[in-house]
Length: 375
Image 1 (tube, one colour):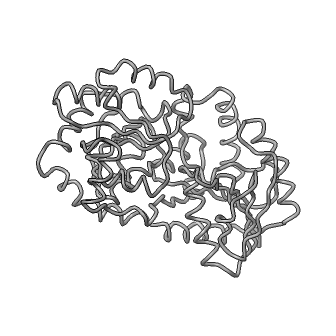
Image 2 (tube, one colour):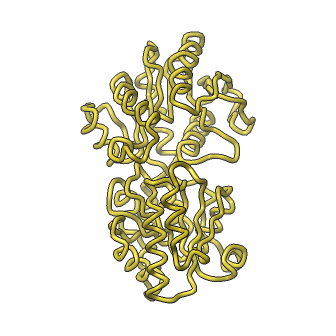
Image 3 (cartoon, one colour):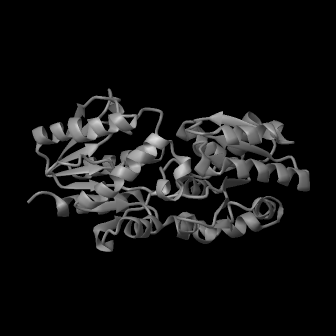
């Protein structure tokens, strides 16, 4: 097969959710199927680390697409023109974006429809693009991949797509995410929190991540229980973070909050491994990769009881109402201060983690591409 792939999120040292998904899936497909040719379509100069085999042909197709107008130009003109030249059997788009008028069979990955549920959390121009284009992408796709059963149902309901047109291929974790030893845990605490225990958040600082209630909950936990715990927040400032920063400035315990910015995967593994718990109380997720990264590192999880998060954490975490600060505080107390609670939760982690495997997801996606490729 000749498989064209949208690889614009393969960015060296800047991989986030879609970028990690793209890397894990494409690397496996390239290496397992040397008989096929993969055309990787980048929107800017690429790093050689992302050329996973001699059967990859990288193409740099401008313009760099980081704005709604440029997204449209890139997809509908630049990518379409490349597809017309390449004449691949199928086009795989891990970020869901498609050229609307191509005759090549297209398989997008639609990770979530958060913008349909929380439109105010997206810039207006971005929202206009999403709402104008994603229903069309879903309609013209030969088949759709998504990352949770929740999002599969959501696509069916929002866009009236037949359920048999959608396949779930779960996210998984990088093999680097393993428990830390005692020395690593102590060194990590010394580095970030002067040896004190800490709660951890991992993700972009964005309204949907519910950072406001996260900060309020930590402040309230400190007031009620007077522990040494700190809060470590790992992630870049994404969009509309002014409410989060305002909340932070109003905290009684803001001096106990550490912002690290974006970190590399090796450092992230150490932070998971030494944390008292991951606090991941978004009010909407299509999946929530930090949940399973934390569980893989032996870190208990407190997460929300909405959207995909109960599906992802299973019995290996504590569920909270993300809008109820006191509910979050009670779960923080349980996992951090109740003897044996951490161990009780983590007993369920191996069985839950067995659901999420990159090899399984990559092969499922490859077989889907093969099924819907041009005859």
